[in-house]
Length: 449
Ligand code: SAH
Image: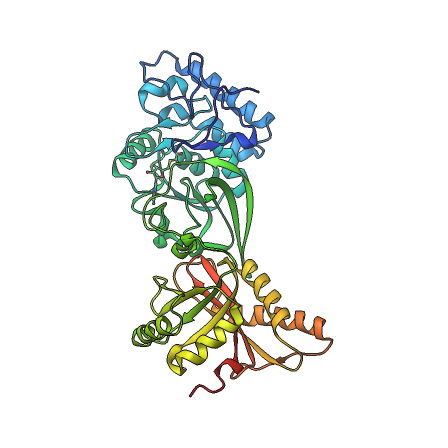
């Protein structure tokens, strides 16, 4: 299959990228270009009957390609007239695999194949409570309404008032009055109708907006394009009683999510971009209050003139970076800054703020750093918006238990847990979507008063 162009580096989207081999064949007469072909708006020539035939052919094609599998989604795609959800000038192109522009600042109706792609992965079924982020044309909203049926609920949130007005008109004319349309920032979800069985984000985000995870029912699923190293990965998140599990489905291209958790406004880790050799040692210092934080910064600048001492944007939390051995540095800082410093953690790993990644790092670090005869504890301090939905005591118990098991296997005897004054504390300092995992040693405090 030859496209004659590459679907890359564009923000005008809503479809599968070439990586999945989706058919993005441009319409006749289009020019090779570095994005999707946007047909010039024109007075429609096709009849309703022409478009009905195209719709049926499209549904059959998606079925043969394995993108469309369940009969409920198939029936919905046959029932909803996609031509009712695009500006009149694009009507004749509505069954082509191209995203089409919509009224508003940054909105497109996604390619036809992207709807079964998301909804099949989500396992959207009759009776579900469904939340869509990004109403756009309202086409995905209408499909969801058909799929969940009268027992279910469809809530859809749109940031752009002009786009929302367009979608509302489309939905009303097409007879879908029983959907809840909300004007607002979909990154914040819609708590009034939560919890949801399924959530679909139709704009690319730096991370899954934490409020959406909170509003997802245990056992629920969420699909979203997640930005990673310049790619957008359609990511399926399953929420279980033990945390969230993520699966990457394929590359996609969507317009960027805006708002509180949107692109640009929510950067996972500003200090990550500072560069510098990776051999540098890093500490996280968590101070009890802002006064102590100020004093600690002054003391650090004096004691370690070459170090990079930075605020993290989270109150009372500093990072220190400098050349050298991280454990020796942590000891030096703990002694040098005195008892007022707060917790000094020697950072040994940096992971996404999700239970599995965190647990894996904590177990590895615990098994490596807790010596025979030493007591240990595991502590988490959560800050900002993160994916650790379980309560802190439960997470500490579960991950502490996993460290215990790994140590027992390594030492050949039961390790000692001491929650009040352990020799080694394995610490997870959660700073929004990133978690620093490392250790603090009791011995570092010896000699401080
Ligand atoms: N599901 C849509 C695709 C829309 S494109 C459809 O089927 O047509 C993405 C949409 O997300 C745009 O309409 C854009 O305005 C909207 N959007 C971007 N950021 C948003 C946010 N934070 N909250 C709600 N909508 C947002």
